[in-house]
Length: 396
Image (cartoon, one colour):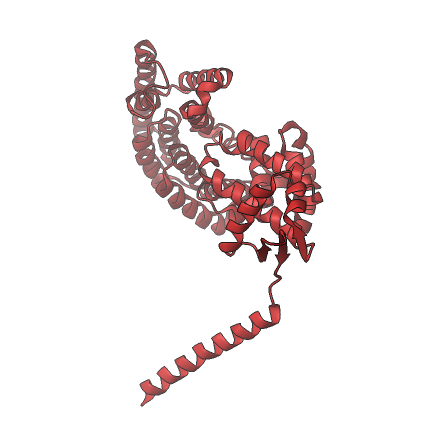
């Protein structure tokens, strides 16, 4: 167990890939893709056996929403439980010996090893309790940071937002006390992943961009998956000029972009104004990277809608007016489709334009900056006058 404690920064504990595999199995669409389904099942079972995950395996079998995804193997469960009992007994003996014959360093090492083992086997309740004890006894900023990062992984693994946010806050406070460069950068990836889960693409994408050239958090996420999430998040929030500089031309993205399906076309088509190709790439990204992702699938509808609005806005900014026919041709969709979409987005206040149904023309309505500034001054002045009147009445 010393290896786990010493190499925690290199080992995925708990392994988030297993939750992704379980998610793939749970998707109704997986029944139509037997090769993907079998690969996910194999990955999940191999991971469960490798990490001796009796509590996790048992939880899957007992949960009505997942019990049908894996065939119950009582021999496997008994074998894993036996390994868990043996390892925990060994750790108990090590702790007793450390308390009787050794010092605080050895005791803390055993406490950390037990906490990591509970996290490794997917025992959430005991992992949280053991980490709390290990954290309270830990000596040194680095050790406490490592325990906090593992707790964040536990939270992300089980989808427990309270655990995740609590320990992100703790880790950030520790980093401010003087955390080293490597842990500071890892924490950006951890927090960024959490922010994407809760649909804060702007802040999460910014943190991922900051960590792009210094990424080391392979215990949390593979590099190609990290780049994919970085691109997807920032496509939604970056301006066109920044899109080219920070993503399309980024050496870290260029290094792997051709290994990731549809990503290059997704970026370059929007930036280059090839909207028909962009719509095709967006549909492919939806099927390949959004819907099958445990991180992003809840945001799929929101994301694809917002990206379409960005594309429509980008085209409309270049023209005072466009015919619906030309817009349909530009996006590779029917006139009826673009008419319905634009009408919906315009009525919701998402696009500054109007549709002339008689002429079949979309007219851009650019915001009047001067009038907006004037209105803001009037509004701020009214607020100030109201505050002064309240103060004068109080003084009287």
